[in-house]
Length: 175
Image (cartoon, rainbow, N blue to C red; front, side, top):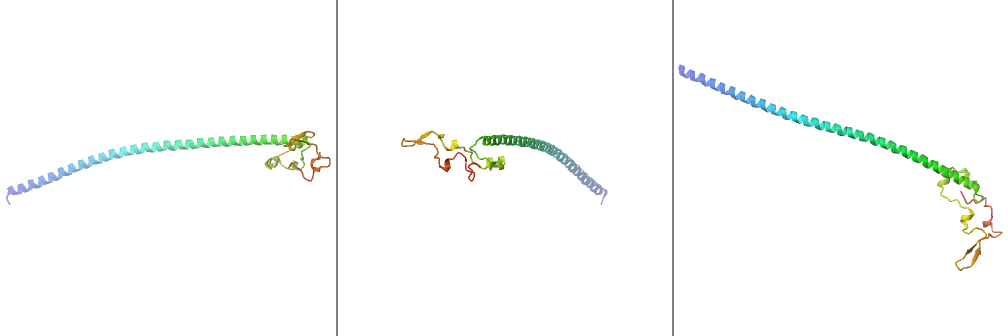
């Protein structure tokens, strides 16, 4: 081999090495640029995710505040319901007391068995208090008119046990 060929081979090897170096450098630059672009995209995604996380935290805080507000409102409504219930019980007790006093004053109402009941039992039994005037639409001594036009006296028969002045003790009408 002569020296010209040897120089040609050396120059060829140097050119191939130079091409490999240039290709490697260009490849690294592209890889570095791609990494930079990917890093930028990742940062943008992280910012978007951060904003989304803040929005979710804000929604969670709002939901928590709404829940606390609902609890406060529910407690206020419970308290209002308790107050109304107490007021209703107070009014009921007053009405029962007034009925008891009226029964004590009315000579036609039997109160012995009802006195043993609590006011709630007395109001819950659903029976009505009636006196003699409620049972007989026309008061004693007045006459009523029959459909045929004749008049009938409402005077109780003297021997009629259903029309005695005192209620029967064995069958009280107002319980």
